[in-house]
Image (cartoon, rainbow, N blue to C red):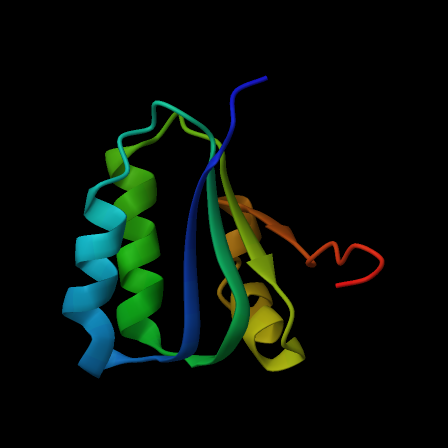
Length: 97
């Protein structure tokens, strides 16, 4: 099994971080499964959601998993029906972490 390409974000992902988000997602080429780790994200807005949709359109056949812990962030993905475009999972914490 191929190792996934993991991209982690933290804090607040809003319009002010759009260029950083785009730059980090632009390097993904779909050559490996993609994991977007949002475990430490407290807030995101439509700019981030749009970046994810652009990623999905650019890589329509890639496996893309979003790892989400904060209930408020998970709720945004539920309300926007992003589960239709991405696999959304809770983080799997290992014992001792």
